[in-house]
Length: 605
Image 1 (cartoon, helix red, strand yellow):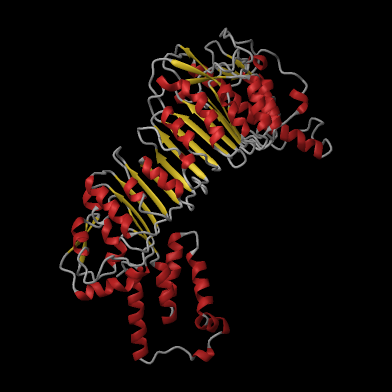
Image 2: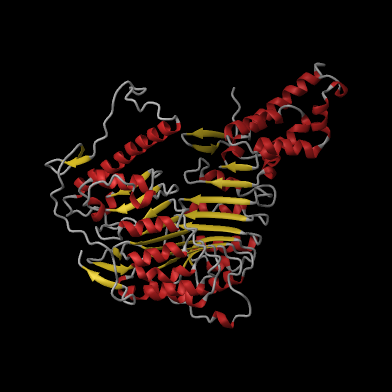
């Protein structure tokens, strides 16, 4: 019969060894063993190091199989191999299955006990439970509620896993959540809880855990409900390095701000503005924080938080979830506040997201609102996304951004904006010239100047080519001549692998031309691939001294002619010659702003 678990195989191996010993089938004398084998057996540190290398193998199945083989090899290997074999436990079923099969049975996907656990059953359980350091319990665990109730009354003091250091528990019901105290141990340093409910019972259990596990340093609690205040528990921990939770109170925020060990913080602001004056505190706030993620229901609450705390993280992520339309005027002040609150040299990643507000009109936000961020000279990534809001682009501001952030790698500005207005190609080229490390960009470009002129025999912009750019998001631009756009983009960004335009989220229901323009941009992508292949052929011909330039057939034994795209009568783009498109779209060239202090205007959708 095939063993149900690695430990069952170990027990069978031990029994076999005993039978061989009684029958006189002993191995060779230790003196006849190879020197390498003796070293592994005699030097525990060397043995443990080798076993750890086996445990670090990338494939889980292969790793377990090898450790099982080592556990069955000899008595000196059994202990270390079992420690690693049981160190990280995904689910509690393996421990149940190492018990006698007369105790449990499989009923569908669930395990059930067939009789009462005896002292002998618990003795077997205790052979392995002390090896477990990490336990993960997911939803739909095969261990039923009846087994959890049985395990809650062991003949020894709880917890069931006395050396547990990491606990991940995903609960779909309150009954399962009630089993968490069975594993609460003072040794736990990492706690990750996911609950579909969070009422008085769950709150009480969490508070109890925080008192019984004082050494927790990494805490994550992700309930699928709005009533998820973990403030009481958080204030009982003083060694936290990483916290992910929902909305917390002002008192909890102040407690977290005092922790010298806190590196990562993801939380939600309370519904009332922070009122404490942190300047009067006798200690620095968030002194070690490296990454901050804040969710807020309004700009006003977020502005109040940034006004009270001066921080120096490497990464900051701010998300507004609702109630923005009436407070949109706070946005310029908030971004200025961000510049004042964060250390200019340390901040490298900024993400600002305004979620869907489901309003009946579109508000335009001038790009100059982002100007205070120019102070962050070491910025590597900027994501600014405002759903239901359009950015008003400006060439001069984009050029200032490019000059201020020479190390920039990712620039996403309202990626999905449905607009034909944008910066000029010249401004886009300036961005690429001043940001040589840029690999991904999302900006709206006004392609009218490129779309309205034939392809020049000379390379655009003196042959400038940005080699690092691989991904570009251009929103939903309307173009007539895919060939002209493709030739330009292919020349300035020869390694561009992905162009994203006219995504489903960008298409308005009333825009009947979305399919036509989406097809044209697909043609642009196809042509860029063709131009790239042709350019590579030309490069190889130059390197080979012009071989193949005399008209000889290529390796595929055919001649090929590259033709640009034109538009058919139904507005689709195809390959070949043709006339200009007949859409009659009017493109606005350039951006220019009249008054940089006037950041917002209303535009009808």
